Length: 301
Image (cartoon, rainbow, N blue to C red; front, side, top):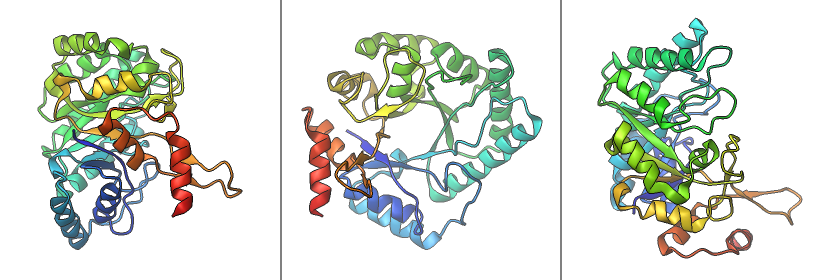
């Protein structure tokens, strides 16, 4: 099982990320190369990157399974020409940073088609990505499946296949997000049916990453609110069936579940659940008291 979580990219860059991932018992991880909501980026520190790779090697983390995430401020679906130019230039910059770090995959939200039709939004995504792909940077862009909030694009297989078919590039893939799929209306209790359709329209070889999240919402709510594993409307058994699906063997699983709040603390501290969720997923046994256990464990530290 290749499993990890979102981690920080701090003062020591990738080295910070690896140390956090190792503390969770992970063998992969996902990170942003800077804040996901702004354009501020520090130069890649080669010494820290070297230390990161050494630590990965010592802890059986294959860099080929590590995932970067593009910032939310990139909106490839926009009709605004200046924003399109920004999306192209900033995504190219992020791809170059990934290449410098040795990262093979970057997840991208396909964006929202505000004020225009669905078709116009999809064509804008294709235009932006075609411009980016002209740079021939050997980093694969993974289009993330979205929940359908507002005018989000990439909300179903037909939209994804339209984008992918019109790009025809080996550097385009897909990141499935279980919360987003559920919220978009995909019944994950019949996940093999979804994979059958995906295989027919796109090809399972395009799936390179899975964001493993439960959902705080009912099926088809189009709201995109993640829940901790087993504590949402998808449920532990359904998510474990996805984890253990033979057709997805070897694909990195990334947790983006919420931090756990300490309700007895006036400072309202938040604790990362990933070490405990990873352990629970590996065991295949749901712990209904997991969230309280996490609070108690962090209080002891």
